[in-house]
Image (tube, rainbow, N blue to C red):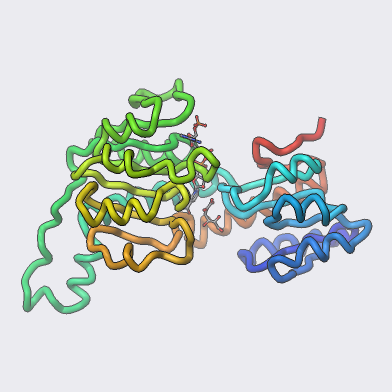
Length: 318
Ligand code: NAP
Ligand code: 8YV
C-alpha cells in the first residue's frame, strides 16, 4: 500500500525501474526537469523530492524537501552544500557499478591503443579484401606504465583488472592508500611524468576541474595515452585536442566530455581517439542495480530514518 503522506517528485527522465519500484511505496509525481522546486514548494504535508537543484533555488523553495536520491555515484549535479545547510539528505549509488565501469575503462584502453573500433570499421566497410589487412596499430598495451588518477572504489577495480595485463601500475590520490603496493605520487604532474598511460577516474570537484592540463599532457609525453572515464570536466578539452593533433601525446580514449552530450567535431575528426557516449555503467543489469539502490535509499529513509548510501557530506540523524 503506497504511503500517501510521501510524494516523490521525479524530474525529467529516469530509469523506469526507479519509478516502478517507488510506485509500490509512494505517490509518484513525474514533472518536467526544472519544475520540481516550484511544485515541491507548493505542497504541504508531504516531503520528498529527488532532483538536481541549484543552491539559491534549493534555499528558497521546497520547504518540505527531505531527501535527494541521485542516480549515479558521481553527485556533482546536486548542490550538496545547499542540501546540507537545510538538513536535506543526499544519497548516491556507489559500488554497484564498479565492475561495469572498470570493465569499460579497460576496454576503452585496449580500443585506444590497438585501434580495434577502427579495425572493425575497416572490415565492415569491405576494405579488407581489396586493400588488405588493417594497418598495424602504432601503439600496444605491452610494457606500459599505467598511472591511475583516483584510486577509489572504481580505480581499485581498474587496477586489479590491469594486473594480469602485466603493466606497471602507479597512482595519484590526495591521500596515499595504505592497502596497496602500487607507487603513490603526491601530485598529478609527478604521476604523469612517471607513466606513459593515464587513466582518470576522479569526481568532479573544484580541485579536479581541468586538472589534466597542458603541463600534465606534456609530461605524459609523445608515447602517452590518456583514458578518461571519470568526468569530462577533469580534462581541458581544447588543450587535449591540440595535444592529440601536434603529437604532444599519442592517443586518448574518452567516455566523458566537458560539455556532453556535445562532443567537439575537432575531437571526432581525430584518428587517434576512441570515443564513447558516457556508457561506462550503461548495461541493463548495472543500471537496474543502480535504479534499485536509488529506490532502496528512499524506501529506507522514509521507513527507518536512515539512507543506505548517503554521500559523505550529508547530515546524519544522531
Ligand atoms: P571514490 O571511491 O570516491 O574514489 C574517488 C577517488 O578519487 C579517490 O581515490 C580519491 O582519493 C580520488 N580523488 C578525489 N579528489 C581528488 C583530487 N583532487 N586529486 C586526486 N585524487 C582525487 O569514487 P568512485 O566510486 O571510484 O567514482 C569516481 C568518479 O567516477 C565518480 O565520482 C564519477 O564522477 C565517475 N564515474 C563515471 C562513470 C561513467 O559512466 N563514466 C561511472 C561511474 C563513476 P583522495 O580522496 O585520497 O584524493
Ligand atoms: C551514469 C555516472 O552514466 O555513476 C556515475 O557517476 O556517471 C554514470 O554511472 C550516470 O550517473 C547516469 O545518469
